[in-house]
Every structure is written in C-alpha cells, then in structure tokens.
Length: 61
Image (cartoon, rainbow, N blue to C red; front, side):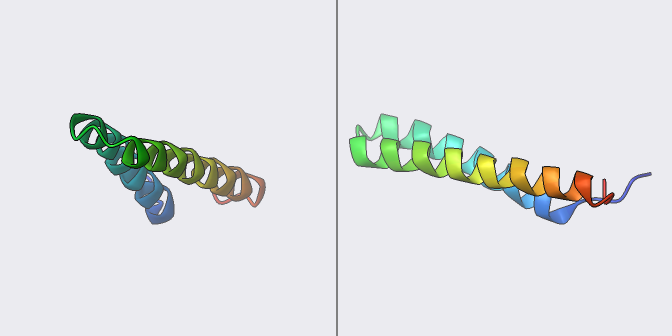
C-alpha cells in the first residue's frame, strides 16, 4: 500500500471545505463570501497542483 501524502491530503480537504463554503455563502446570499471562497479555492488548488508538480520532479511521487 502506498504512503499517504499528508500535504496533498490537506490541500484536498481544504479545497473541498472551501467549495462547501461557496454553497453556504450562496445560501446566505453573501456576495463577498462567495467571491472570497472562489478566490480561496483557486489559490488552494493552485498551491496543491504546484506542490504535486514539485514532488513529482523531485521523485517523491
């Protein structure tokens, strides 16, 4: 069985929570909350992909 990459798991959980936050912000009719969560999702997913690329280049994946 492969080892768990905890940093990538953390990025995935955080992105999923932010996507849920978008739904909550829409339900609350909060434009700032919705935009904030969308921006945060883009940043977190970008950092996750960047980390995965760096790990792949270093032979850690």
